[in-house]
Amino acid sequence: MSASPARRNIVPLSVFAVAFTLGAYFTFAAVQGDYGLFRRAEILDEAARLEAERDQLRANVAEMENLTHRLSDAYLDLDLLDQQARDVLGLIRMDEIVIR
Image (cartoon, rainbow, N blue to C red):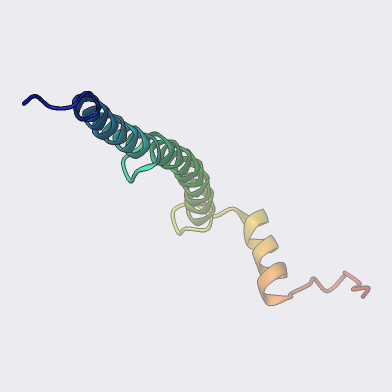
């Protein structure tokens, strides 16, 4: 008694279906998963954004270091001191007129 022809066709078909399903799952995971291509693109984009922010912060720190040096005891920039006194303290000279 041999297996019927329909039974012989089901086994290769079921093996193909399982292999296709596994292949589709792993392909989907490679593209959409936590470590997939789309996530990698998001990480690279975030890294570029953070590097730009870091560069901006470094520029801000360099500017603040320059201003701090210009107002230090070792080097005093009188123009900057005058500007800061006007901006922060609201001071004016005796010969100036304030218009608001």
